Amino acid sequence: MGYYPVYLNLENRNCAVIGDGVEVGKKIDGLLAAGANVIVITEKITPHLEQLDSQSRIKLNIRQYIDGDLRDIFLAVAATTYDKDLSNRIALEAEREGVLLNVMDITSLCTWIAPAIVKRGDLAISISTSGRSPAMARFIRENIEKHIPEEYGNLLELVGQIRNDLRSKKLKPKFEKWQKAIKEEIDRNDLGHDWESTRRRLKDRLEE
Image 1: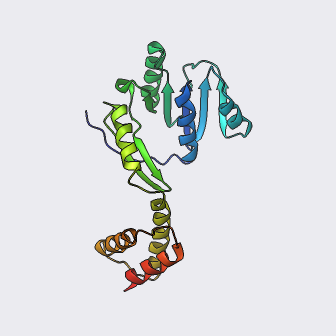
Image 2: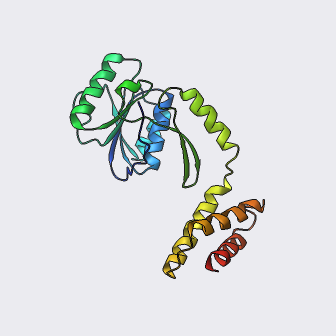
Image 3: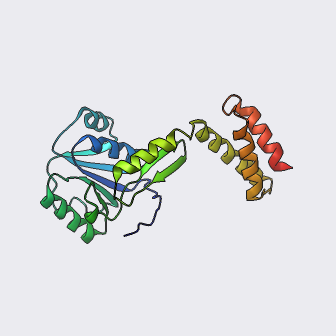
């Protein structure tokens, strides 16, 4: 089965994380970074969860999942692979309530799967194996990370600012011109040494 790749806007949307384990904290952090309202349902409290709760960054429920927990939820993550019956009950409620659900490591119960991601600021590169091999997705992610320097995130921020400046002047450089200007900066091999000079060179090329 194929998957349709998409990025979701979770700003101020209710998202639930159910279960426990190391991955739960990572999923919560990712949802918070996306601006979601995160509701956590777990039987095992961790220092990380306590800290987030004390900062009022999550709504923490220290208990078992019960039917009705997915009401008014937009997206949910269930780290409940250890309990097949529980995972199935969560999946049934998600289907009934129209909730986008990911049951970690049980692809057949998922309406979405999480890709491996390389992040450089707002630049995000997603890798998916359609749920067939998380290990291979991680292998590919680690290889890509070696070739995508941190400076690319800063370059994206700069390029976005320049694009807005040019739009305010009613200038719309062609796609090929953008690509050439960006490539020339990367090929200089001094990216990140002087961002103001980078800005000036890019604007000069694009305003020509």
